[in-house]
Amino acid sequence: MKYTVVGAGAMGLRYGILLQENAGVPVDFVEPTQASLDKIHEQGDKVWKSRDHKDRHEIKINIFSPEEYEGSPDVWIFFMKQMQLQDTLDRLSPKFKPGQTALGAMNGMGHIEKLQKYFDDEHIIGGTAMIATVLNDYGDVDFMGRESMGSSVYANLTEKPSTVMDKIQEDFKAAHLNPSYTENFMGTLLTKVFFNAVENSIATMFQSRMGQLMAYDNFLEGIARPLINEAYDAAEAAGITLIETRDEMVKQVDYVSNIGNPLHFPSMYQDFVKGRPTEVDYINGWIADLADKNGVNAPNQHLVTNFVHLAESMRKFTPPVNKLAPDYKGN
Image 1 (spheres, rainbow, N blue to C red):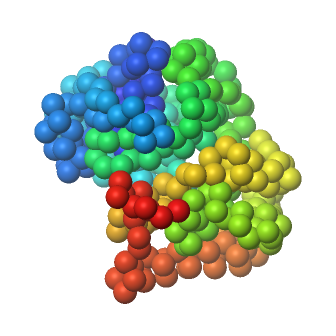
Image 2 (spheres, rainbow, N blue to C red):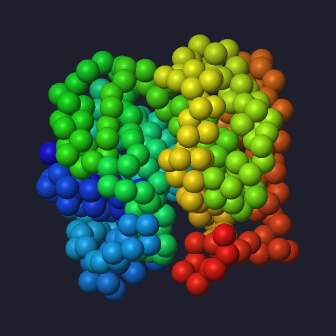
């Protein structure tokens, strides 16, 4: 199948490059952010790829703006910030054709409803990716961890099997994205959202790597579990069953922080230190709203949402240290 990745950020580049290089399938990129598009064009339509800050080399890609793109993919893969999606869909809408599939594996919630305006339910796939990746700069991506590290999970919106899903699983396996398939759509999406509500938001507030959070010996039971319990309470009140139990989620936070990616700075931190808005409203804020709508208390989710926004506001008084910068020498 042919894929078009919309968004040439960290995850968009990782998916597209792995599909192109490992699976050997045709891939195009559509980049709605003009500064990113200009930078990649200046590099001769090449992007820099590293792994754990080593082996930096260029890879040629096909990349276009939404307006100039004339390709006809079987699958559109959307990887961008939630607040960018609607404008991008509006710009791309003349390019969408019947029978094409939309795959959204973005952080946070809100994207599926937007995709439903342009694609029918039978051609919408949701996914989550636990694959650490850093965008050093536009057109410069760093794959964190060894080859084939990380995993991804996908579900059809219909919660029924499909030929397209079978083909995607085959291609993604060849690309070393370690895919799996479920028939629990919302449970699949919320598993990543609930994880991010702990790791992304707390690490961003304290400008820390995931592993550094574990320096506080009560992080799992004193911080992670209360946030996870509130999230699960909200989901259960809404009639949603996740693909992991509460205890499994706490164990996942423990594993990723201590073993899986202890040196990783989450994507929310990457936005935070570069002065961009974070996606906290689509993660902790979304969970808080779900709780409110279903008569469940979620004070910690509300508090974390407000704390992250406070941290954003404080940047003008105390600029954050960009620990991702090549010349940064600290921990």
